[in-house]
Length: 481
Ligand code: PLP
Image 1 (tube, rainbow, N blue to C red):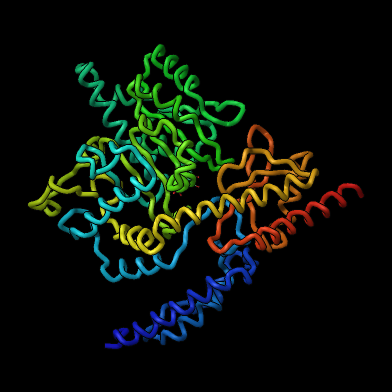
Image 2 (tube, rainbow, N blue to C red):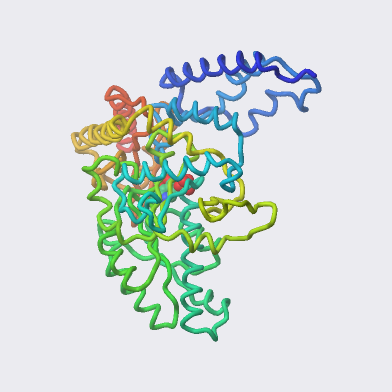
């Protein structure tokens, strides 16, 4: 058989490691945004899969020829769009090992190490963030953590747990009520500034979610949630779920968890905290004030795959009482049963799919090979670089900062109309040297500059500022003509 031999795999693998290291080391020299048009790729490769095996050397050559022209370089220091997605050598190596083991860890027996490492890593990480012990498996209580694929999944899974709990509680109070009647009365809450995945979780979960208005500083307040709960109870509805965001996508604003938590607890409303991006900063003790009130939450989630140097996908979620999920999602066919059932988590009950990769390896490698000290340094450096860019913007009185800079995101705009800022962004992205995306809050359009790459230095920020400033010079000159 002409399949790839182990020796060939070694050669190909080593060559790929060299290619990968070189790609990342020199990434800043590549144009951040590709220039290809839709459909660019098909003519570059044959119409059909080859009958005979090809040489790995040829495949590797084609990576540069076929793939790289169509890549947006997310790890370039010139990439400032969205929020960061993480990338580190330890996590890449862990993914190689995960690929070799290639287990599907849906139950404990399906690969005990896969489940057990995940339980311990979520404890390590939870302690590193300073989460209350009620969330940690090592506390011996009900709580524990799980790795989901994305924050969107975590929000949906929490909603489904909250829904199961609300149905059980209502059935106890009103045994005469049908489940469908209860579901029709359920109502959840979030801010109009929360991520679109929250609204989507409501749609997928088949329940109503109300989008509440945040205050003038874009934070969702306790009294707003309280008022909505009161109105809905008066209308005969059943409030059951609330999502608070720590670090919103548009402007990295922090909802007032300290106010929302007590309101949710008093009203038996499940509180889920979405800290997808900003949660990583809590490994630095000086930023934990931003999660004040976390002890009131029922579930908490953040993405190490955003800002903690663990490659996608790794979304860490903790629950104080996972039994609501486990019971809600528990279908137990004979072929998935095993003798140790009940003495360790079977993570298939904590998530939507059945299959799951060995993602805890990435966390283990990253936590050990960086140490908390270097992960903290990474967060602090990004925040310092954001403040450096902020100082450039503040130093030019044609611009304004639209949101307090707390993390690695700077929201700014040219003083003037939305249209002016739209033209500015088009010009900046059109040159392809740096890449930003905009946002809009209450009809004010602004630009978002996120510090994304672990390779970013002050010099890179100087380049980015130069791009922004020169584009502004041109836009303002054109406007005068
Ligand atoms: N929540 C917030 C606050 C986010 O900023 C994002 C993405 O940027 C998400 C959720 C969605 O994350 P994911 O892609 O992991 O679902």
